[in-house]
Length: 270
Length: 264
Image (cartoon, rainbow over all chains, first blue to last red; front, side):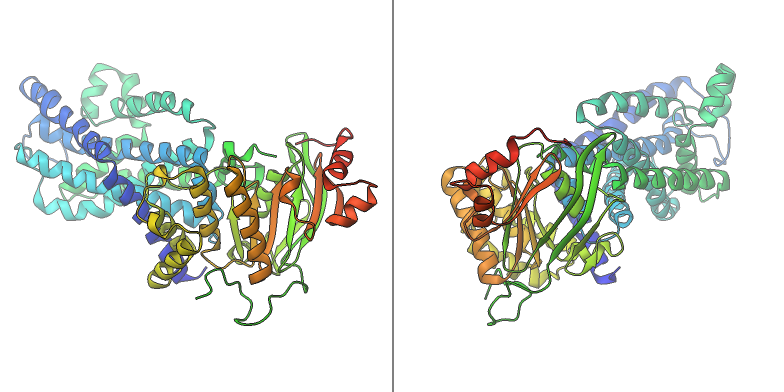
């Protein structure tokens, strides 16, 4: 693979993604409103009713709105990963995916470039959310914001890989909404995003076990520990492992051996 | 500047013979148990337009999906500009320009943005890409539409942009999959003439799938695909003569009226 060509192609894929993002102002607005509603409405109510004891990585008592921020960062990236996969299904139906996959570069490289460009968009959204949250008085430790960046790349890639795997399995755009409902909300609710796991266990052991098997729990915990400059090896291992598994499945899903999803509806010609 | 110039030397007479730019041998493909292509073999030479003629469902799009690497078949070989697609995919695809049957432009980006995106995918440096895009848009008569959103273009204008996009990286082989679908008569005429101009004037090897006999010129090479099999090849007049027909239309009807043994 020619390095200059690979670099230019990556830049082109990233540039297109950012261009589409900038042009779709509604998408940016929706991406910010969603977690802000959780933070400013849901968390404000819970703040008054739910006390959180001191649990790692927190060293002092924290309010609920502070607790929920890492989960909302995960929510932004989860939605973005699914949005990215939705746009891949759309691209496939509209034929743009054929143009990408017929590019003279390794298919795996093109798909990883696509995932990275989607992740870049999600990172912009996360930092914009953190800035707005800070304006409303929910501040994260400033020293954790820079170390958060590489972690967001990893978590964003993991959730994009999950979305890309789904998009490789879904043949039609119409089926996607249902899958998103059955994936995004269960993943979000059955995780440590809204409540600490020990609290969940008090309510239901079964739910606790489901939360422990949910990769999104580890995305949230990795973000949470990084913000407080702590190293969570378990979360890192689970998130990296999930990326490898779903990344590989997504790339296999887009290989053309069986006709592949790249054909889309455009493949049904003469 | 010679905007559509091929890889042939500047000023030299474009090559029309020599080694085939595209060589397909023993190619078969099946969707599950349904065989779509059966032992297909064909060659496309530099400077020649080869019309891939076949009724709907003949396997043309399947063949194009295999040549562009979107599908993969373990039966048969595809070689583009001397590079085997299976062994050297990137090198083979680097010589290929494609106009897909379906519209494949990003509707929300401008004409120029679409072309810049594609130039990046092909690894063209920024300045070279900008010059090439400007020259190609001038050639297809859409220089004034560079900043226009693709969504605002007519079907014919979009098709022109797709042809320009396929030529951005100066391909040795140009594939067009039923490019005139949905176009008005004037745009169809422009397209067919332009394709022949690219072959004759610039030495590009062209493979154009169509089911319309009036898009085939008498001097073209012909491959007739029916039910996933090649039922005739050769120069147009030879195919007409061999089938004791008065016209290509009549020859095509005879060749494709038999029940196919394989279907896509």
